[in-house]
Length: 130
Image (cartoon, rainbow, N blue to C red; front, side, top):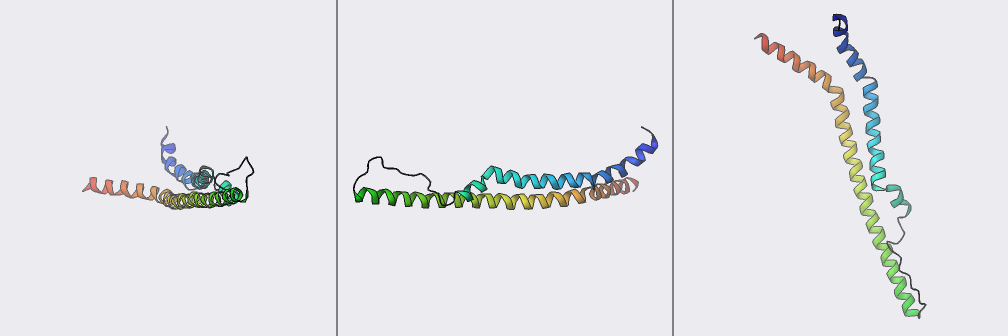
């Protein structure tokens, strides 16, 4: 390694850090939202929100009492499905909030870490000279 390369290395790193590295960090943050969407199946829960949790089918067609009981059970299963999907969507929203806050902290750290490194190196050199 030549002296010119050693001097240029920190500047090349900073150029990468604040250009391509920053764009890649933002893309990684975007992928975290996509991961939460796929992990929690938000689209599926929204599309099937009013579907019953399990459908109860009567193979034998009985009287009016049996039909009313079956309808009541199916209505109850629909309510159970809505509650379960609401819980899953609320969990997904919590995951989105965690991903958003975590991403903001990561991006802020990404922007500040080179300055923090320079500051600690400077303080270390100052401490050595005293």
